[in-house]
Image 1 (cartoon, rainbow, N blue to C red):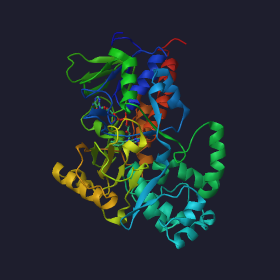
Image 2 (image 1 turned 180 degrees about the horizontal axis):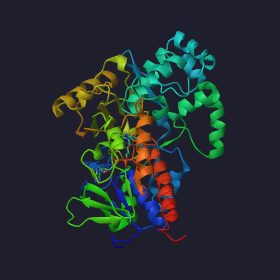
Image 3 (image 1 turned 135 degrees about the horizontal axis):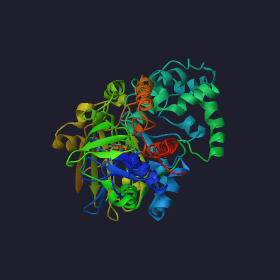
Length: 467
Ligand SMILES: Cc1cc2nc3c(=O)[nH]c(=O)nc-3n(C[C@H](O)[C@H](O)[C@H](O)COP(=O)(O)OP(=O)(O)OC[C@H]3O[C@@H](n4cnc5c(N)ncnc54)[C@H](O)[C@@H]3O)c2cc1C
């Protein structure tokens, strides 16, 4: 296929969003090209095999919240590589008083847990009677949770959870933008507890899973399997090492100026799926200033991912669970740890142990930037205190994400309104990626589906495609 086809859709960024979008358009016979700045596709998703360990540099697992995921995997022929996390992954831990406490999985466990005080448990009984908030107010998550569930649930459930998902802070994140389902539960049912019960019925009808009940999954050789399969399906339609420098408008659509390419590339539509900070260096040859200013306000805190691999498990027991999260009130230097070899097969040599520790985020951004020695020493000290893990790992490696995950802060909806206005003004231009529609891998795939429908529909509407 030539770059010159009049209906070509140019997708910028070969992360999971851009690749899924391009794959879906390609499958409909729409001419598509993907341009990626880095030398490899994948963006945040990157797996390597090192010394017998399977190491995830970014996301470690995804959640099966939508049937679209399995449809995609079946279509790509990678369904046989798919692996659900082990049943033990249901066990999740939160640190309190320097000890790991199992997160209660149901009402009886909630009554018995020492993670929350008796007063905090009693406070839950009041939740159905708390008034719903003004729907026009953009409330932060900390206020929302304190108002509905009480302060202790904020400190020992939501705060660690938010650092596990967003590497974020509850008082900064907008409940409506970052956790839209929570906000909707309150608005629809007037109570999270009532909504959890009644909402589950509605979801079953739509064949969707809530993020709480959806199963975690990966592939035998890690999440990179998805990236590789998407890139394979697109073949030479994906070009790497070609950062987009400028987009200009023409009578027929757009032209792209790419680094390392002498000639400008024409395209009928342009779907940008790079991070919000990718716009800092991008020249737009048309008016889109409000959207650019909006995107510049999205904060991406730094995160350091520290992989620790042991050829032999040094503990006298297996680590059975998903991992643990650390509430801010515990004053520790790490955000939490995932127990990879408990979750999926083949993450460590037989009898070994693999775990990943996350450091930094919005809570302690400076920690993510520590020199490697200090990071490794800190992680070792924390794992010794919390898990009794004594010797240093046989294989330890640090990956740094200087701008890791977009924070959907209070005011995010206004920022997205500016993005929508830019799209409305420039037909055929789309601004996607994980700053919009959710940050999880599953949300990125869902957003890519919605975007593919929109791009294809618009092309047809403009008469650029037959049918
Ligand atoms: C450390 C970490 C851990 C995570 N853990 C999980 C997890 O366990 N589960 C989960 O569901 N999610 C997790 N996430 C979130 C999830 O991985 C991401 O939200 C998702 O992968 C983002 O995909 P994307 O395609 O939208 O963006 P990216 O993956 O960021 O891809 C965007 C691409 O655009 C390219 N680009 C940028 N500028 C240009 C340009 N000018 N020209 C061309 N290309 C450009 C970039 O190089 C990049 O490849 C994690 C993220 C991080 C960073």
